[in-house]
Image (cartoon, rainbow, N blue to C red; front, side, top):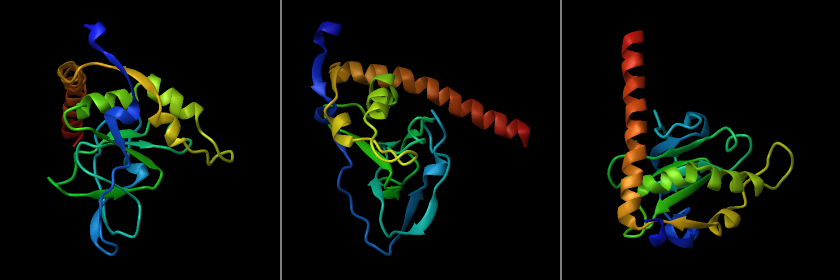
Length: 179
């Protein structure tokens, strides 16, 4: 099984900060940094704001904080709160990862980005003044990792997603019980 895995750069399996368009002045869904919960896949809400700039993304994309202390605190999420085909935006302090169609499974990519292998490298690559350090995106792009075939990525992503789905369900049940 593992013998079928191939060594690839992260940029070979994911598009980084893919180009999207939102016209300036358009009201769009924004996902502010403070909405992301540490080590939690789902995004609970958005705000509608007039777009004037920021990182843009779509459903299925993974967003990871690139600034200290947000990255160290585990602020990484998978976008699923938008309508089909809709483009949302957020902080310029996000790195957006988009699975390459036919090469990478979006759920597998999310869990890979959350893995210590990617997170620790990103944290070690940070540069800048104390308290305002940022990830060097090129270092993350060039990370070489062993990548399973797409069919195995789908199995791995589905397996891990089932745990996060259960956590999300338990959160909803707990909120209903508290109400």
